[in-house]
Amino acid sequence: MAGYRSWILLLTVAGWTRAEIKFNIPAGKFFSYELMRETFQSDFEPLSQLYLGHLYDDPMVFKCNKQHFPDLPEWLRFTQRHPYDNGFLYGTPTSPGKSVIEIYAVNKRSYETTRQILVLNVIAAKSLPYQAEFFIKLREIEKVLPPAVQDEIKQDLQKLWDTEDLDIVNISNALDRGGRVPLPLAGHFEGVYVKAGSEQNFSACLMRARAPEHQLQCAAGAKVKVPGGCNFCSIPSNCISWCSTELFDLSQVEPSPPPPTLGSDVLEAVEEFAPPESPEDRNFLPDYIVTVIVPLVLALILCLLLAFVMFGRREGVEKRNAKTNQIQLYHHHTILDNTDELRTMADHRGVPPPLSTLPMFDSRTGSRATPADSPRVPLIMAQHDPHVDTLPSRK
Ligand SMILES: *[C@@H]1O[C@H](CO)[C@@H](O)[C@H](O)[C@H]1NC(C)=O
Image (tube, rainbow, N blue to C red):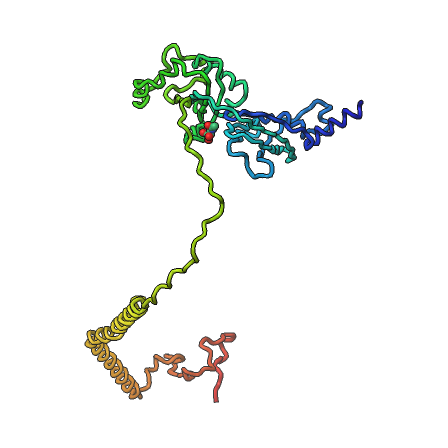
């Protein structure tokens, strides 16, 4: 017995052997399925933790797709606001058929994954003849999808419709229908559309939404209240916006157009295929002239123009400056002449320089020391003994 129990537990922990969950959904009725984080959490939990009675509360994200397909069926949507929230699969199937949905849960703490299989069997059903759509302004889709909230809304609508025979046909996010993302402030919500259907005709209250004066008021943008005696919302956030209420009477549906007649799948025999005659030759000369010759001529003209500007105009500039050049040339020559003249004058300077200009001239004795231009004589003599003639004798 104990062995049998642990075997069951092992199966649960492995996750992959979890039984398929099956649903039979009538076409045209709303379906929603809550992906409970707790159930997936028990798949992730190691045995020891289970025995200790301690469960983590891990963030989780889900990936849902139709088995062997990348995405969900067209009618089914998935939403999860936050990894710490439950996810929802919801939608309204329209045609009968079977879909196998794979749900992968990824634990964002340990990055383990587990899988669940959902088998949705859509069965044919008659669509409800009277349908009405309501807009709930103060709601978000995730807050409406839990079954308890759906029931609250349904009860309010049953009172409004004055019948017990009522089903929810569709619930959709206003953002999917062109709604705007609200400000991230308290009191701002995305809004939810709820469509309900019934076999019973619309109640007097609902018929008021059809009244022309009501529609005029709404078109004028006035804040129209739910008419007196028709306000059945028990919870303020479930109240409908009266102006966005729409009624659909599907009881007198026009007959669908006849299906197209099918042929025998065989094409009728026709005579042999005659290809059309080949078109006559085209004359490409005009094209050639336009695309090659004309640009070439233009380029040539531009070249000539540029050449003229570069060479012809330069000459003109020199002509204008010729006079200035001549003056400059004249200056140059006079400078040269003057220099020459100074040079020749300097050549004739044979007079010895005044004695006082010589470096070693003693004004008292009148003796002249060494030639001033001798490179071997230092300019300043070493003075070690004042009585000794320090001047080197030169022979
Ligand atoms: C339900 O609402 C969604 C969103 O507006 C829409 O795409 C879908 O066709 C609706 N389904 C039915 C059966 O009306």
